Image (tube, rainbow, N blue to C red; front, side, top):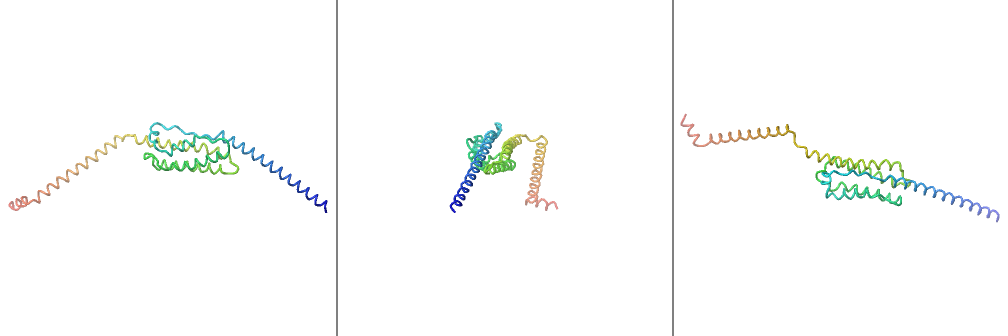
Length: 213
């Protein structure tokens, strides 16, 4: 009986050692994987923010949400995967705030739709970063897409300014002048008819018409 107990205890010890070795091996493997992921993110976590031309920049003044977002985007996380996870959450939050206080000139559907697309990309980035095993291939694909959406937003802003500065075409001006002339002529005709009606309906005019008969 005693020998069976010793054998059982020895077996339990062997199993525990094996489990411990497995856990250690898994832990080492996970650390190596996390280290590789961290290295990849550190090397590739760079967002391209195209410089806004002076006219766009002038319109962006006072849009604090834009300044805060771009500053957050330029500050790269360091040290750990948790730092990158926190960064992705902050980008999502600050990206959503871009929909507030859009400058009047840029507060148009074309700009809003591009901001919405940007936020979709940022939310996807946060989702991938929150996974236990971060899919670096997905992350490396989204980072340039975010940069592309930023460029698209600024290009649309620039296009809005360019269109606002285009003078009316000569033909359109001529047409507007013709419409003004026509409206003016109609007013003169209406005024003349009104004067004739008023003169015809006066007492002196009616007396002259009766005498002539």
